[in-house]
Image (tube, rainbow, N blue to C red; front, side, top):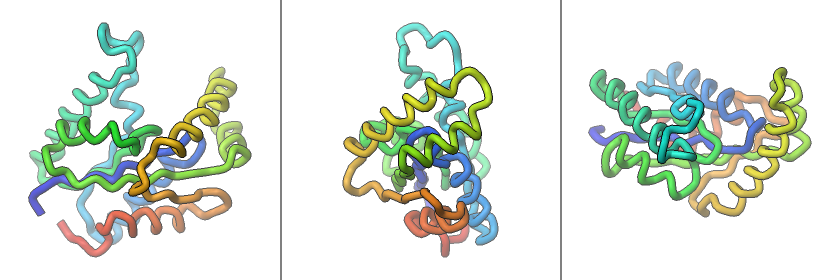
Amino acid sequence: MNHAEVLLLGGRAGVGKTTVGWEVSVLLRAAAVSHAIIEGDFMAQVHPAPEGDPHRAEIAESNLTAVWANYTRRGYRRLIYTNTVSVLPETTGMFERAMGAGVGITRVLLTASDATARERLVGRELGSELEHELAGSVRKARLLDQRASAETVRVVTDGRPVGDIAREVVAATGWAGARV
């Protein structure tokens, strides 16, 4: 395999993107499938936003490009990337520029009901951001539901063990039987 492949795990706040991403990594390690994992939110965690980049998209892409270059020099060709809106069609260009033309992209939108997301966020957000996260989670859930393409695999997380969710996600990638 010469070209890069990326699994984009998206979804509202509280849906379990990071948890599922790490569990996908556990399953891939158990199957001896070479891969890297990046929490996309960390690629743009700067304040204030860079001049001319109010949504921090340019710095996120620049950081992804640099980190991916380090991984590819060491032979990695598969990436798990978690970020709320990473599954939207407009992100294709960022991943093609950062990872190379022809990158294989699997988009998985994790979903959860408002009640489930609220319960998870209340348990997770211990600082002053809870109300902001709750409102943003509802808004992003609606946006993702409307704008994710028909090819995006949708995986419900409500009431399901993380291992079951991760197995469904790994199956969507087709990586389970591959060895690198």
